[in-house]
Length: 295
Image 1: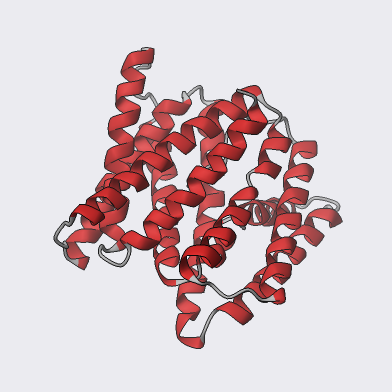
Image 2: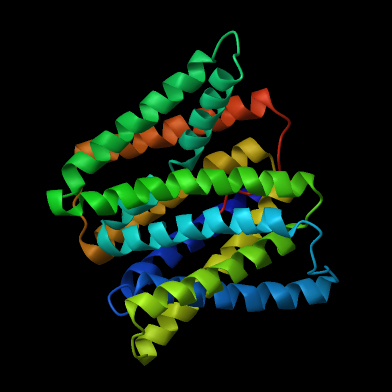
């Protein structure tokens, strides 16, 4: 299966997972959904690691801890936003991670006293945040502002997690091990959060939605990993934004989410900013095959 097709299927599965999360949010708290998403993922990845002969013990536990801390925090905020915002809005705000990474590069250049900051990166960041302003204005009521901020913060934390994943890759950590420790972190954080939120009783529909969330996320992550290992990173990063299109379609079809020209323009600006930032990063540094999937 070609990398392009793998990426398209992976983004569709991630968008479908977001539908399962939104539906499950009507019955479960965010902590419970994250817990079961992590548990199912950990079991699947542990089994796959054993089958492939990948050792689970890591020589860099501290790096995994910090990657999991930022990634799980991003995941919880994203699931919270999905449960409380129009689906495409929550997904798009999380996809701001590429723009946040560009902002981190600009901040790093300033702190290191670089002679000049790439104006194209600055433009990408400005375009991205213009897109955010357009999305939030027509789709979020005043009492939903915190939900929008949670979605935006999830993208920033996801960007931090992606940078840490890149560092783990350079340290020689296999992708399956990285995903496994992230899943275990989701189990731990989800259990603690659920203890404070309260545990809800299961129903057949609820269990199926939780299973769907874990299965879809894990399979999508594996497909995306494969696509990045055999395809061109910049093409894959661009195709990943199809997730916004799929989520928008799901939102209108299943949840009756509003369609406004401001929201559509905002999504287009964020996609353009994200692709532009990805292209500039690929020119400034060696290509990385680390997929920026989920958190």
